[in-house]
Length: 266
Image 1 (spheres, one colour):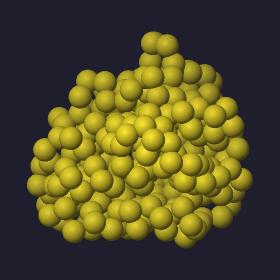
Image 2 (spheres, rainbow, N blue to C red):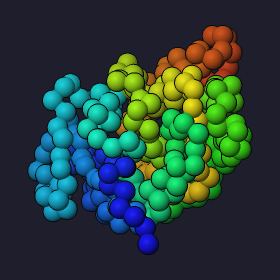
Image 3 (cartoon, rainbow, N blue to C red):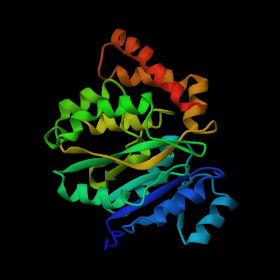
Image 4 (spheres, rainbow, N blue to C red):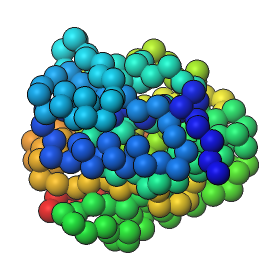
C-alpha cells in the first residue's frame, strides 16, 4: 500500500482562463496512488476555476502581479510548502504512479535538483507515445539513463545545447535547490529551457525516469502553438543556443530545431 506523501510533494496546477481540460487534470492528480498535496495557482481567477476548486476541495492561490508565463510559474512554485513541487499544466494528465515513481527516485538520488519522466502527447482523444519528436528527445536523454551521468554538469549541458528534451510539466523540482525566480520573465516560450540551462550549472543531479508517466496536450489554443505562429519561439531558441554556442552555430542549430516546432501544431 502506498503512503500519503502530501507532506513531501505538491502538485501546483497552473490554471489560466477557462480550460475545458482542467477538471480532467485535477482528477488525474487526485487519483495518484501516492496522495500528494494538490493546489491551484492562477493570475486569471474566474468562476470556472473557482467552481472546480470548490467541487474538489482544492485551495486557490491568486497571483496579483502582472500575468505572464514566467511570472505565473514562479508564483506557483512559491505557493508550495513541500520539498518536492510539480507544476502541473492545466491541459495535461498524470498517470497514477507518477508521484510514486518520483518519490522513489528522489530518495535514491544523489542531491537531486530536478526529477522528470518520459511522456506521451495528447492529440484530441489520441495518446501518441511515439513520433519523430518523441524519439529524438528520448535519444537525447539516453546518457541520463546512466545514474553517474545524472550528476555530470558536462553531460546535461551538452544535452541541452542541442535543444530541450525535458518536458516541463513532467518535471518535479527539489524546492531547496530552486532560486527565488527560476523562470526568466523575458522568455515567453522558452522559460523552461532557460531554467533547465541555469539549473544545469549547479552541483547535483538531473534525475531522468524513463517511464511514460504523464501526457502533454498539443492543441491549437495552447500557449506554445500561439507563440509559434507569432515567431517568438525562433527568437528565443537562438537566445538559448547562444548560451552554449557562438552566434553562427546557434543560427544553424535553430534552423534544424525549427522542424520540431511543427509537432506543436495539429
